[in-house]
Every structure is written in C-alpha cells, then in structure tokens.
Image 1 (cartoon, helix red, strand yellow):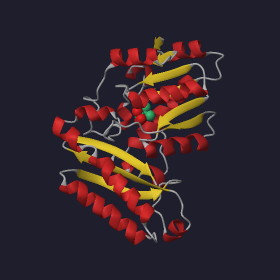
Image 2 (cartoon, rainbow, N blue to C red; image 1 turned 180 degrees about the horizontal axis):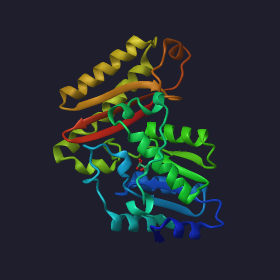
Image 3 (cartoon, rainbow, N blue to C red; image 1 turned 180 degrees about the vertical axis):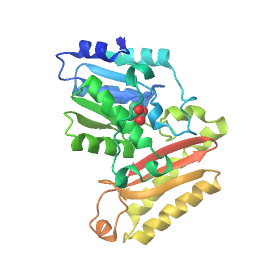
Length: 283
Ligand code: PAF
C-alpha cells in the first residue's frame, strides 16, 4: 500500500485511473470501516482510503484534540484489506490556506437533527468530502449508514453539483450486544459500555411499536419518541433527540405520509457520561 500525503503526488499516482473507489475516514479504523473497504473493492479498482481528522467538522467544545489517532494500527488493517493507496494528508497538505470556500448544505437537511446539535458539522463534512473527491476523483465512494444524515447530505451534494461519483451505502456494523461500532465507543467506561446497547434497544422498541400500530398518526409517533427519551433519561442518558422521520428526506412525516406508508427511519443521538453516540434504524 502506498501512503501519500501530498495532493500532487496522489494525482500522479492515480493518473489514467478512472475506476477508483474511495472510502474517506477519520482513522481509528474498526470493522465498520473495513466493511466499507470491502464494498469499495467490489465496485472499483484501485481502492483508495483516506485518513484525515477534519478540524472543520468539530465544534469548539468537541473532541478534535482527543479524537483517537491510531495511524500505525490503521495502516496494518488497510493493508490486509488490499487498499492500494492511503491518502493521509496533514492539515497543511489539505488546508494550506484557511479553507474559506465552504459547502453549506440546505437548512432543511443540514440544520436538523445532528446539524441542530452540532452547528457547522455538515458544512465541515461537505467541504472536506468535496475537497477529497477533487483530490482522488473516484468513480465510487462508500459511506456508512450509521451516519444516516451524513450519507443523505453527501448523496444530495453529489447530485446537486453533478459530481461524477456514485455514492454507495454500507450497513451499520454492530457489536454482538447491538452497539453500533464507532471510534467514539473507545471513550466509554466499563459501566457506560454495559449500558450503551440500550440506545439500540430504544430504537428497536420504537420500530416494533410503529410496525404493530393499527393506525399510524403523528400523535402516536410523537408519544413513542417521548417515551423513548424518557426511557433513556431514566437510565442516566442525556438524549439530544429521538426522531421518527421520512427516509427519503428526513422530514417529520405528515399524516398523509403515514397513510401512504412511506418508509420511515428512527434516528437518535444521546450522551452517556461524556460520550455522545448516534444510531438509527430503518422502519
Ligand atoms: O464519517 C466520517 O468519518 C467523516 O465525517 C468523513 C466522511 C470522513 C469526513 O471527514
């Protein structure tokens, strides 16, 4: 595997390749990331991965400084997956000048849910992903559905800018007890790690109840969301949101959407101790 930090060197290596598949990451790789590499391998050649902890997507009180950086272990994992190039730019390589041109996703998708609790997050994500796409010029890029809103925003960005890249989803990979794999799980104490699968349990309860409902309407969905917030709060969580939304645009469903049986997704973000976890389930 070639490890490249310089944009020009990356372009030289990829010149003439028009079938590259790409998996952008912030490192600290786990099975979830590796499953994305496998999807990338099925859909393109060569496979390019990137590791870059992107300052632009962290808020001032978030964990940019403490975000786990495990480059040597990550390199070994990527080599095993047959990744051809690891693009691992420094901040100076990717942002030689302050990044003043930014991609701002539309309010109705970028300022809800994660965007409401992490202002500027999706601006930072879109900006870095557009820049990484410009460096790698992949045919295909793979993103995990654990970051459901991120996946939708990036897919929409690609459509709106007519970027010649296909965005593919990777299913959420879970530990045996159901906890979605995430680099931030490493922050959990032993007690918090034992409690953490209850986040999925809250989502599963909602999904089961929505499926069983004789008649779906906004009021019943709202009371399910509230009951799940209460369940988590009583167990010591600090939930930001549990929201049942339309899969197609993450808008709150109307009664007409519910009558038409439009596909739903339930999304959550909640803090346990100092660690903020997110998860979602399609209904
Ligand atoms: O999902 C992530 O790890 C990051 O948000 C991404 C897409 C690599 C952009 O920094």
